[in-house]
Length: 112
Image (cartoon, rainbow, N blue to C red):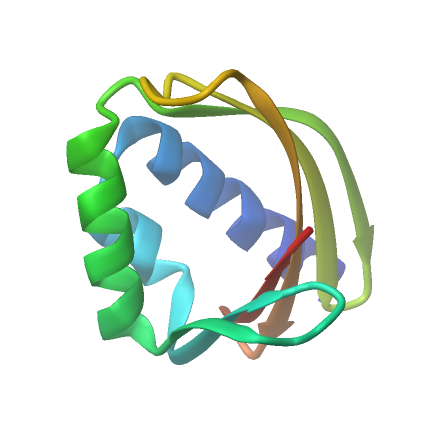
């Protein structure tokens, strides 16, 4: 499971940096949830909301890039520490994402 989890995390990261929306979304389940940590408040519910969110992000910030600073894999969870740059309206910022994999797709993501 750890190999699949790490592969999916890397696939979506590479596609994110390439701004390849279709490949990016292909790593996620149809009913994917993006949540705030630690509240579990749902930010994005389902692949269509995710499509809209990231399509807008890629269009608004064509130089957007996430550099992987560190990764931990434990069972069906991947924790990525990233440095996000290239957003015209903000300074570079560090981000932490936790990906949960079910089957062969990312089913949940928590952002800190």
